[in-house]
Image (cartoon, rainbow, N blue to C red; front, side):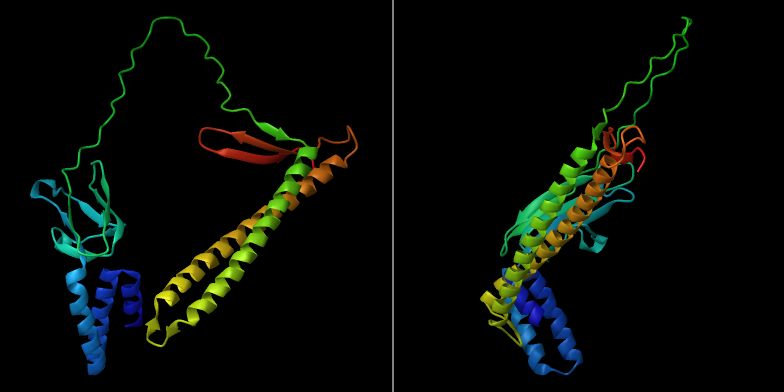
Length: 274
């Protein structure tokens, strides 16, 4: 019941309507007539306000192995061509079948009183490429030219390793500071939300502040992880840069940080003796 009330205040009417139905069944099983009546009241009040999405699959488009999804979740055949209540916002409709090009469509639906229909087209067959026949040539063969290098590797010498390491550490400290600030503001928003929340739910201010607290908490976590990675990388680069610089000239090959780009990957490595 509390979750349904919060979703109703947030404008997620379809979610609230479904949750009130679940609460009604639970109250009925538990013999709570008061809660069952309250859930039934909300269900009746929300139903005429719901937005609905109908995904139509014509008979000609019903191919073997056809899968219809809404927002990444498969819709059973019983839900095809049925107006299903849905929360407002953007939703992705996708249809796939073996050997066919997929169909994807993004639709925007209002929070209330919108009826939208999406029709799945007949999926086009995938194009099959056939390589041309190989014809033997009587001309004398020539030696194959050496392959061209895919990309030039960029080498970072010890002084540059030190500079990169110090820069990475500085950026990591900045990320930690920003994460600490985000955590502090998240705790402030959480305290503000508790002032407008009660046993049965939260008021508009409580819902807004609680959402803000969660968002800022996520930012604090992301910034903390980013700062840790940057500081760790910087310490490693500083270590290798100092170690390579301290070796006597000609004694051994100094360690270098190498970055090499190819069409499919970016390769990094430490080369030389450490």
